[in-house]
Image 1 (cartoon, one colour):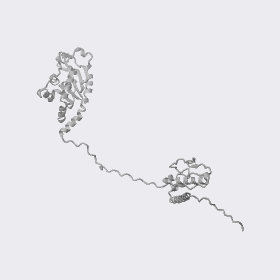
Image 2 (cartoon, one colour):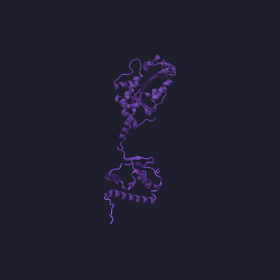
Image 3 (cartoon, helix red, strand yellow):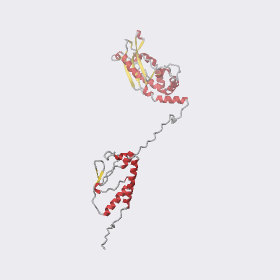
Image 4 (cartoon, helix red, strand yellow):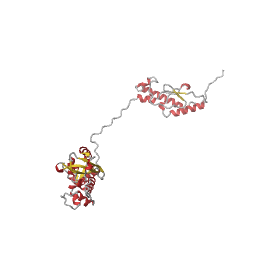
Length: 348
């Protein structure tokens, strides 16, 4: 009887993880074919070069990039069976995180080619879910928030607030003016402008020029005007000076004493709502212990209320000094008089 030879392989059985990997792969292939039959994976039939690569994966250790976008694994040196089995177990452990995307194990170690990103293919093939459009808000659904500060019903408080807002703008828009005249015409009875001075709210000089009247000067009135013949040599012609002055006065509150005379010499009419005449403010007369209806001179009001002498001596008046005194007098009653005008606005 011939000897019976049995070729038995007592090697270690294949690892369970490898078998599980094959089973998962077969399950994946089964799902993929089901999706292909339903028409969700029609793009799978396109050549690999035309498939859009939506998600690029970083290169893994031991793989080299190809022209078509796939990765080719470099051949690894052959080692012992134990080392190869442990390497396969580690690779299966990494792929087990996403089991249904795990590709089938390659038959040849030297020609392993990575597949195109299946996640990108599934996302491109699956139907897109339309997002629900946001509903437009109905008109009037949101009510305007109530104001932080409640309305003030008091008329006095309203007028004070109205004036406090206007008083912040007054210093930059308030000027004082004073003019000096000479006599022209028959016997010098016509008053013509010969000097004009304009000062700011703080008393700074904005304009101060000698002005040559268009008519011949008959009386210089030096005793009161301070104008002399030499002042007219280089004086500014009336038309030019008038345009310069009106550019300063336009849109501003103008303070003056008996200011109607100044406007008459300028041949100009200023709005009454922007005019403050210290000769017609009863509050000033009351402070000076004078009758409210009386017309007090600028010199007397300045002496009683500011304790200062102006228009003194025989050299004549100074229009700059007079304009500054007029502005200081008005400041004494500014708050009260502006409140009075806010409640009783003058008609132009």
